[in-house]
Image (cartoon, rainbow, N blue to C red; front, side, top):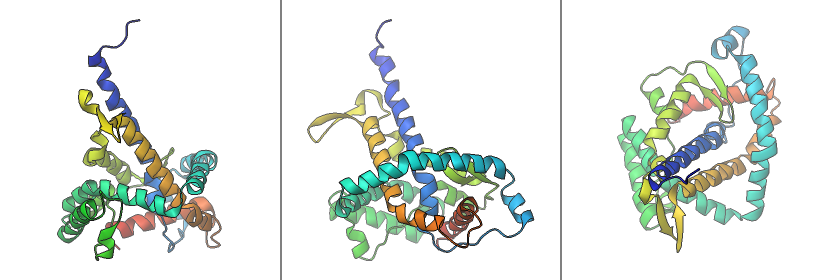
Amino acid sequence: MSRPTRGNRKRYPQVRGLLALVLSLALLSAPASIALGSDHDIDNGEQATESIDPFEDFNRAVFDFNEGLDAVIFLPLAKLYRALFPKPIRDTFRNFMRNLNAPFILANDVLQGEGERAGMTLSRFLINTTLGVGGLFDVATGLGVPFHDEDFGQTLGVWGVEEGVYLVLPVIGPSTVRDGFGKVGDAFLNPLNYLGATGDDSEKILFGHRVDLADFLFGVRLLEGVDLRERLIEPIELLKKDPLALDYYTLIRSVYLQRRKKEILNK
């Protein structure tokens, strides 16, 4: 079999870029939506549960599968990451990724008609890119411009799109019909997902080494997901021990839906 021509190899960075996108959604979507939320309401009434979660048996099966993956892969990676890198280094990486994601957040601010928040996002990006040495340091928060996050699922909610039924997606985790479509929108809105999908220009010199940008994005997204899971080690442990929960599945469903409503209202 002949080796692929250079023209055929141009497609490979696009495939790796798509893989990086899927990985980023899988690692980031579910934890980000339950992250650090402590106030929640437990579902009351069988009718309400059937309305929001008509596929509960399927969702529970997927939920158990995801829990197994977390126990075997994601949690051990998060603990190893914490052991290898002290908190100042982890904070520096998190600052860098927040700054790198600023154009995506800005796009959703604009689509939601949030002029003030869009101005804050742009200000943070300019301040941290310059005074914060490329986003390594969060100077903007100290100057009174705090971080906020946005995604296209929230934007759809602001536009009045109903959340639809609750779904648990393999690897990705808690979601709704609206948030599922929102994740597709995230793929197109985030400029990082186009990194490395430009054929001949996909290789750049970085820190003195030739690096494929799609591979670089894959690594960054993987580390971003591990970093987020590291921050959620204690909060998730607390959720699992919550005495108010009938069971962990019900609690996560409640926390996810309540958290998403607050995020759409910017509370």
